[in-house]
Image (cartoon, rainbow, N blue to C red):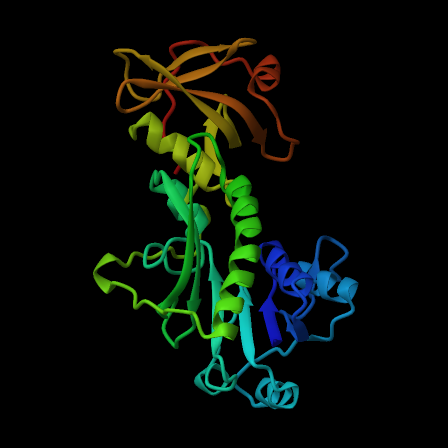
Length: 313
């Protein structure tokens, strides 16, 4: 099948490789324009662009999709299908209507739950036990199109967003290939989404970072996992603002005020949460420093047991 692929970050690379590996004619790859990065502001190619060049595929990077340039390119390419995975741009109606077999999207949730920009993070933030990947027809709404295929997977209680991101990316490629085969053979059976079950996953922000110790231990553990690696959960420890990178639920329950430091030594850093349960911080990153074990941090910044931590404003 003649396919145009659209994607930008690492998540989309598995889907592009899977399509190319399945023998489809990927006649063009659309990705976001190169962007300046780091102190030198050197232009950085997207992971999808790097993959496409490695595979010898033609790359297109239009800054806009509504000025006619992208539509003109696509008309010349004459794809049977457009496959999209985390492209980062909404496709206008004239592009959605162009390919004979339509436009399909690889989305990292079990739709209709978690439509939007950060479905992996929000699934963890909300304490979900399962998520997955959905292949759907694209419509003009945000992730509202008919479902073509889904694959679910459990979320481990200690899995962070980066780890789950990698797993779902690997699931997306084979599922997309299977769906494309069904479309090619006329076997696909689209199912409309149940709007009553729809939830949303908006973009993340640093406003979500500060840890409020009056919340439950599980909620704070999920906050740390769900905001990793960006924007990261944060707390002020020993007068220093730190990103909290890894925590563990101890199962211990104590009758202490929320935010009470129970232990702060080479054996660990344990803090009481709003439900009386204890959260252990095992890895953190002080502002301006590298990531380190909590025990290493405490060597230079001892925190007396009994100290009560408050939410950083």
